[in-house]
Structures are given as structure tokens and as C-alpha cells.
Image: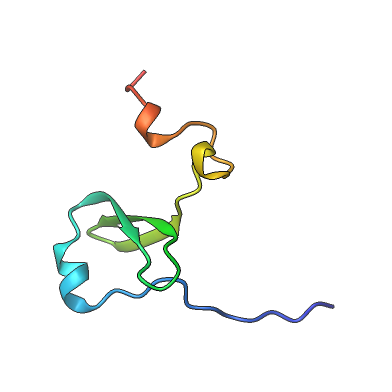
Length: 69
């Protein structure tokens, strides 16, 4: 069995969280320069690495390419 470890990828202070708008937000880590998508709603926050195709990721479409259809 492989052991697991935890790693903090992005931290936000209270002021940064308060400045997030409802819905989708984009943040870049000051430590490693990687980009993250943060979704904020009344239930809290959800985050994932921003790995669109143009960044070598697995998302089918880039958010910039979405036209609502």
C-alpha cells in the first residue's frame, strides 16, 4: 500500500476570501505560479487546479472558449 501525504497548494487569508465574488474566480499561487479555479457560493468554497487544454490539462474545453452553447 502506498502512503499518502497532504500538501497545501494554495492559501487565502480572510481578506482574499472576502474579495472573491460569488461564482467562479481565478487565483494564481504566489509560491509556485500555478493557477486555480475557486468557486464561491453560500455553502462555501470549492477549488481545483486550472488545467485547461492550453495548460496541458484534461478539461475538454477551455473556459475562454465556452460561448454558452
